[in-house]
Image (cartoon, rainbow, N blue to C red; front, side, top):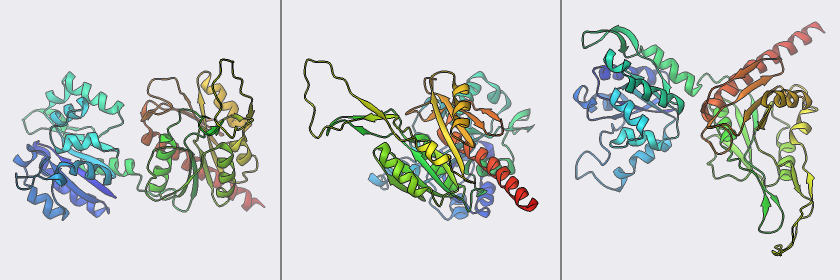
Length: 411
């Protein structure tokens, strides 16, 4: 996996060199981006020798001769190919830039351009770390899904003693592995994920749909494949790119999704049904565009197939995850759906809550499992929500298999 490491201008910049070596030992490919301040402490040549890759130091090339179209858009190319942006050390200055959305150098521009997870490991003077401005910036970054590796207590370069020293390499490595889920705990599993809306045609130009963007389902598909699963993504209409390593099957209507899921789910052991499938469709699809008139229009709607119920009712030892997008009585409705549809886990949220629901990059969900456990998650990125859902899937799947093995041994 590819890590872009940002190195900023603090005394702890020299520690980033050893961290690069440790990341490479764990199989990560590392490219370094250095700020102007970082180059006052460590030379780019050090990181180039360690990584064997170009060290990026300027937004528009290192000289007027190098400034060209490629260098002007290089931050976009790096943003698209990286699996993780890791900033070590992260100074108070770069934290402020990230929190305020400033983009005046390569690293801050890269931060705004990437959709990959971001980890920052701050290091600074004790008073700077405790200053209300820095604390506000840390809070803002956490709310946006940035992972913070808190600094350690200890003797600081300025002579003070307290919080502000760069976290240890092992702690930073653990954060990287946790975010990227390199433990491959879904290896050997085949997972089907549904995502996005369905479109139910009324005539050649009009259809009924909903506000689902597909972002939650796509985040789950990406997370599952990174954790070692073979993933089939059945997607309604969306503008999202297919995650690397995922086989995508496009559908449009609820009936097409029903047929595709029925076919594709047979070899799968886990099904995660995040799509917002229409509950009703027009009883009649007009072959020509319906003309506007001064009369009121009534559309006769009929129920669509209940994909989740049909799949789960005879699931055997397959593991099924459903979603409940609610606007009221979230917990009550989720538990009812969990039981009524024979699910193992349900992910519920109030789609009217700020920062949750359709077309957001964040979500606020609660997880309800068949064993009675309830997990209420705070607002976090959909990528992080996906990982937390899969954490629970792995836990419950392991418990399910243990019970199956116990029953078999008792026969």
